[in-house]
Image (cartoon, rainbow, N blue to C red; front, side, top):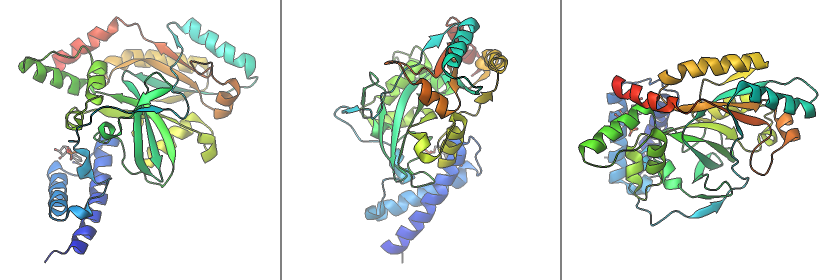
Length: 328
Ligand code: NMN
């Protein structure tokens, strides 16, 4: 006979196993087992939790299905403002940015080049390794609490690999394929279609019925760690590696560039590859890699002085969506 105690033990094993498989599948994009194996274990866990509801824990994979209907979103103040990025549209302006930094920093330093994902900025707070709060950027100072919606996104870990208390930020986006499929479905149902993946992600994230968010196949790339130096992390490229180890989904296309020629090559490469990526990007982001440089140059009221966005020409955007419509 199955007792509550043995059910609890078995549920713990199943959760650990399911979280590992899910991490491989949704975060690393490298499934390690067949879906049927995953589904069987998931159903076993659902069965145990149904029979013994007391054994349910907040970070159980079964708690990601949503279903909570919220009456609204509470406002919350960001611990540090969520700044936007200054942007440039030419390589000459990028050179000027580099020269400006070198007026203050008399030393050589590398840049971390990252793709600028076209989604919505989010902030995630973890206490002792547990996901406790997530929010939108809002106006940068005050955002909205969308914790319950974010819990439904499988790429967001509910529990980290270490019991750290941290805040991270990143981009929530809808993959191109999910966008095309969602619009096709909406069209068939006579509903208005979303103009682009970014709008679809925004509309999906701010749903009062979290079960709708859960069905929308949103994903995330995390790119910012708050107060990294307190954790002994000294570079953006290191922070990305560390966040990946903790269980976050990190974009693997980022690269350290030692010279502006390397930066140029990165831009050219991704302007070319842009159309083939499974998500929309609208440019690249250049960040001074050492946090010591970031600290010295600081921020203006609105934007960091140590980072800049190089925007791709906007008219290519439509082509991207159209290309996808043909290929799906
Ligand atoms: O909603 P969940 O439980 O994440 O599952 C959605 C789909 O994704 C299911 O079809 C499931 O089989 C699949 N999935 C597969 C793995 C795997 O490791 N093969 C992991 C997570 C989800």
